[in-house]
Length: 187
Image (cartoon, rainbow, N blue to C red; front, side, top):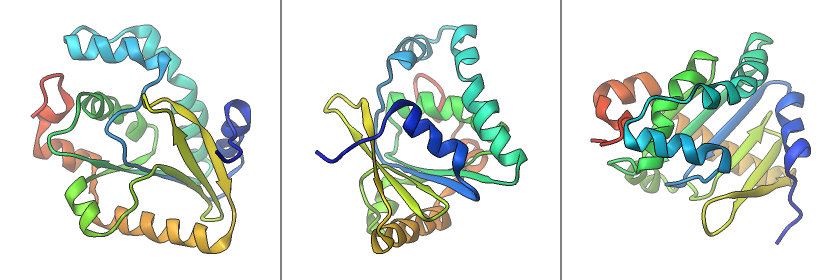
């Protein structure tokens, strides 16, 4: 396994980029101990926990909104199966908070991504100069990020992300086409 950064070192990437932080998400599920209870509440149709929303405030306002207000771009493309998995429906439900903070989030059906030979691994791309390849456990928990700066590898990932963005549907349009995607029962 390569050297991975985690915690503060990984968080520093989001405070030091100059122009853009873009992500490609390809997994059907992401496990985070801080999110497990909120996901269970969502799937049970229970009201949102104020504590969970408060726990996301720093990411939404201190990171995304602060960067966007400073003229930097936050964007991601989520490659999703149809219908979306329970975890992806939970993410779609919460996506509005990220979008309201200024992040450009788009959705791309997995078959359309495959037809364009997009990769099946997650990554962040900072300023189209630093690539953070995300590594996960077999039970979908983030292990950390492998930082890559070799120009050919970074450029290839930037091309993939450009292609994904060009063919993906913006969040509001994706949700408007099938509002039930953001509900516990799904489509």
